[in-house]
Image 1 (cartoon, rainbow, N blue to C red):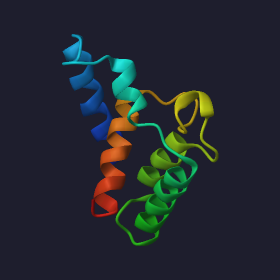
Image 2 (cartoon, rainbow, N blue to C red):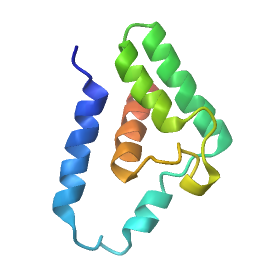
Image 3 (cartoon, rainbow, N blue to C red):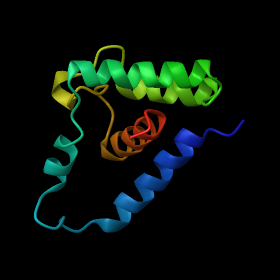
Image 4 (cartoon, rainbow, N blue to C red):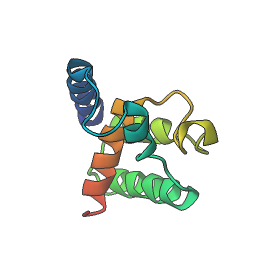
Length: 103
């Protein structure tokens, strides 16, 4: 079964890896901190993935990727995401949740 979420994360990872240069007017750390989640945002992201899974928009594997990236309780040391989640995953999941929420 195709996992569109994992495929998109891979695409983002490839693009970020090719950049390798400083960002215009900022750092990668600043860019990543822009993706930090508050407690209420974390809950909204989890709800969006759960509703998308229940509604058949995401299959079980895709929903699981989102769930694991967010973690049951987000890590305060990683901006409200699961402790091991890196920038490309945050970008991909943020874009997906925005689409699920119609943003």
